[in-house]
Length: 259
Image: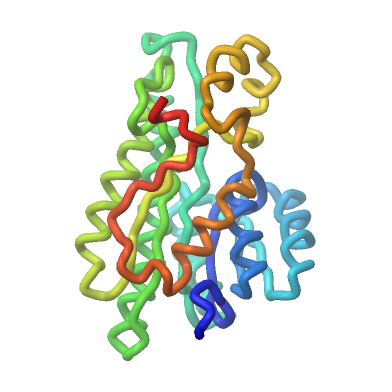
């Protein structure tokens, strides 16, 4: 029987793939045979991630790409195609957060900063990957997987984070629209909604005893999640096992949302 989760010969892009959720996903993909390209804006973190992922024996590349720069996204995608000739999965994971004192402290400029990466960057990344997948399909090689990383903030009331929650809600809606538009090309599009996960972005909260008691203490599975908890979903969505799974919003939060 064929191995449903064998990714040999596939090429995957993970933006923000040099740490946290992105690195966890990239590692899962590398372990299952995919060639992996990570985009990040921190050169030293990129290098460390490449060294870690290369230990699995596959081809790993990293590039400095600011997804808020549309031209940089187009150039980065062209570079992947120049080297590998294809992209089978694009995971738009790069994102930023910004907690404020209250909603009255959130400026329109704050909103625009988050939107530039969390919405426009996700759209540009998935759009350019889809452009290649559609062209490849027209040549007889159909299929592909697009993944947008949202957040449970898309469905929770994220106080003092109205702008962040709005950008993550946009990712969910965007992925649903793309799923409908691209289904005829055999391209799946899904959003992933992480809960409270250890990362650089949540570093201050991890050290906050009150937060750990009042919020993390409510996670049914217990404690914080880790980037490694997202390896499996990345592999599943890249594999033929998910061929008919599209337009979904997959919550990975240890049960926090339902409790």
